[in-house]
Image (cartoon, rainbow, N blue to C red; front, side, top):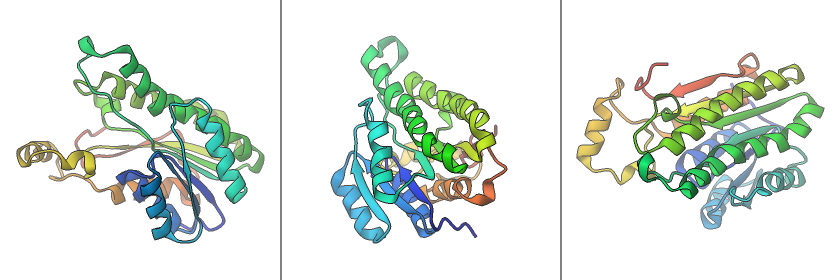
Length: 245
C-alpha cells in the first residue's frame, strides 16, 4: 500500500532498535535509505542486511556541523533527500536539583537542536521539488513529563512545538512535518529492567504490554508515504493507551 519507490530517506539513530526498524520499513517500501548514527559496526551490519539502496554515514549530532554534513552525504549518495526521520536521541537522567548544566545542554543539543539543523538543511531541496516528509521521533514524556527527565521531556516537548511551526511554514510547498511519540517500547534500554519493573510498567498500559519497534516504524512509514499527504503538524502517539492525548 505504501510505495516509496524513487524516494530517498535519511534516518538518524539508525543503529538503535527503533531507528533500525524505521530504516527497514522505509527500505522495504522501496526507498533508498541513508543509515546515520554513531555505531559504525551496527550500521554496517544493517546495511548488509538490507542489501541494495542502503548506505551508511556516521555522525555525532552534538557537532553543529553534522546536520548539514549528513544531508550533503545523502544528496551525494542518492541525489536528494525526500524523507527525513529525526530519530537520534540520548538521555542524561537525573533529578532537577542535581542535574548538571552540561547534562541539560547535551540532551537539548542532540534530541532537539540537531533535529532542527537537519530539517533546515533538508528543506532546501524539498522546497525546490515541492515534496517532502519530515518526521520527528518524540516521546510520551514530552506530553506527560517524567521525574528525573526534565531535560529529555523538555527536548521532546520542544520537538512537538517545532513540528507545528515547521509544518505551518512549508505546507504550501507540498511538505508535511509530523511527529511520532512512542511510549514504552521493547528495546535494549528496556531489556535491562527487572521482571518486577516490567510488570509494574505494563500494568499501567491499557493494552497490557510494551510496544515493538516495528509498531513505531509502521506509523513512520504511513507519515512518510503519499497516503498521509493531508496530515501535517500532527503528533501520533504510539503508547498502548498509556497516555490518551
